[in-house]
Length: 106
Image 1 (cartoon, rainbow, N blue to C red):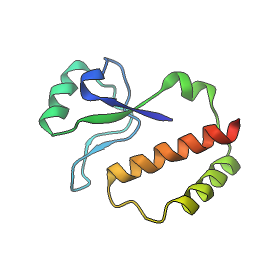
Image 2 (cartoon, rainbow, N blue to C red; image 1 turned 60 degrees about the vertical axis):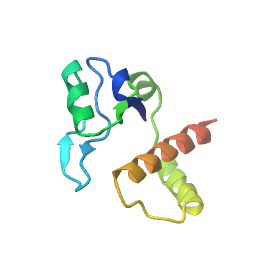
Image 3 (cartoon, rainbow, N blue to C red; image 1 turned 30 degrees about the vertical axis):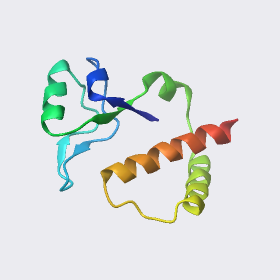
C-alpha cells in the first residue's frame, strides 16, 4: 500500500505509487518513477505538497487475494456515498481501501 510523504521528506530512490497529475488530469510524473533530490523543487514549483510512494517493506509482507480486495471494496462502498472527482479523492479512497485490507487480515 502506498504511503503519503511530504515533499521535504522525499529521499533518493523512493518510488511513486500513484502518478502525479495536474488539475487537468495530465500525468506530470508517472507511477514507478524513482524520485531524486531534483524532483523536490519540480514538485514544489508545481504546487504539489505531498506524493504517494511505495512502502516497499509493507508491500513485500502483505499480499491480498482478489476476494479480500473485493470484500474491502464492498465495505468501503457502504461507507462512502460519493464517487471521487479528482486525483486527491481517489488517493484517499485507495488509502482507505488499504487500511480496510490490513484490518480484515487481523
